[in-house]
Length: 413
Image (cartoon, rainbow, N blue to C red; front, top):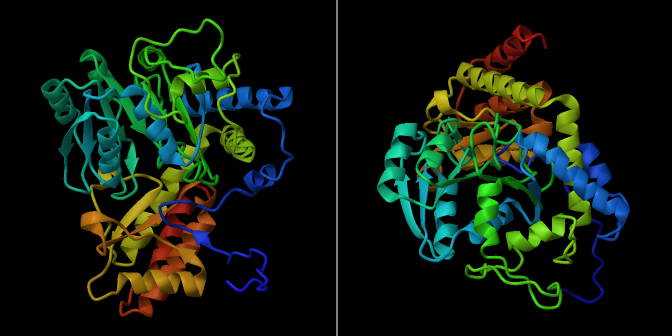
């Protein structure tokens, strides 16, 4: 780059993000991110930390003391939980029903685990009996799964899995990044031991911080591995009996001390991201968690009905479809990438492609968080119909948007 070149101000083009995430950030979240910096041990800031923990206990529907933020995208939460729990040689079972099961298996392997997997065809999920059989066969220390996998748009039923794991002496970890507040996740009632998420889906925030929660069963496991680095180690501290956690940054015991009254000076908190996480949770709870769940379910019903009225085929097992994202087969003779490009260039709307065996076969249309509104569903359906007409398909005129409107009218909207 020439030394005298002037770099213009950032001015991103306006987009309506109707893909698999990230989504458009709620303006109230953007506003709080511009609030002044505070020192990480300023009493005002540590009170915000305490409020974040309380807010996310309500979001996760848990009494877990250890409910806090890991700085980094959603994957940071996954890594913090897995690297802190898994010791080399531990058996980890991963039921894979999409791309993100493969990710959990990858991370578990990097932690030195003996990784056992079961797989099902993309577009389907596992029955509780299938998971129970695999747990009994492999006797894992940890079962790691997703609640919803956006790569397939499928949601794994979890209500019985926690009990299965408890009965077999196994820990259960769930990545709920793509589903939290778009799907019900009563962590305590379902006996889930650990959960991690990100902000960039149904919580309507930016990527960059990972709320997590875990119970005393996880606490007992990770505290056996507690080692505090020199320079911040309290006098008289004795290391745990287990092997040191391989990651310093994602070391849960040190993060627990950072978020507790001990206020261990482990790292500098991502101040603006904490403000964002605080506001994301506050907005959901102000409107009501059940309202958020109902809004996502209604948008899914309207989107599916609209797409079907346009003679498009929905992907996967509809009984187990996630309410906040819809997979739709690309029609024969239609260039899927061209449709996505035209939607972006002509209407400023982004929808998703997919991965692995579904690459080039389906689009993924998200209705998440701040974007999960009647107006956006209708705009997306209208734009998609017009774009399909430009690309060799002739859907019934206005059928999609009219059917979607009817769904909302029936719901009183």
